[in-house]
Length: 259
Image 1: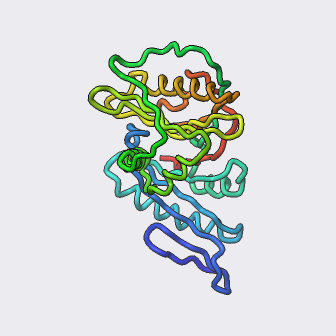
Image 2: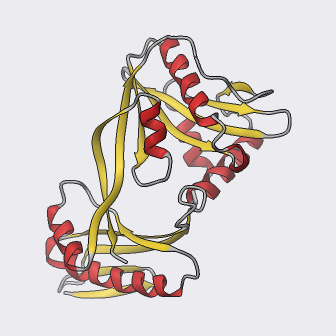
Image 3: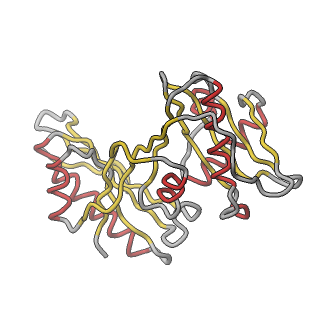
């Protein structure tokens, strides 16, 4: 067995017959809109057979430490693993990682109560199905900038094809305040994506949009709604809990390299 470096940030493991049995990837992103106090985010992802997993983690962590040393801003290194993947957690623990973060699925019951929150002055709600090509491009650009992603139009169009898809926007006379993308899955309404424009943060935009989503789900006859939350992103979990969401399950664990 041997480890081969495909490029600076990707490694594969090959067995004695030259067949790939695992690979690791390291990604550096800027997520200053999600983590303003720690904008640099270096993620490690490994998919591998047990026999080569530790070697691939070793290669990825070495690369991540090198990237970390080059950063001029506060940066963290974390790995993406399943909550049930105890072997990976043990390997990462030996390398100095602690399970500090992850993705939680939050749920709440859908009610048809009147929205009690007040939208910011002169702001209105608009719903669409994202059919306009220009809007698709602008929406995709905002998403990729916010989440440090490189999604394409095909990905966005697939989202827009989900059952009962709606994009819910709050707009002011001057600009876009925030937007949600929602759809249904069985008897559940899903808040898939939520973004607030930088200058409109802490002004109740996200909370009001979530309430409008609740009213939309109620109009569909859905009984509950869900949203997935990055647990350590400032404001994400408090926002969900304030809206009445409760943690249902942990979808992913993100062990973080100790400083």
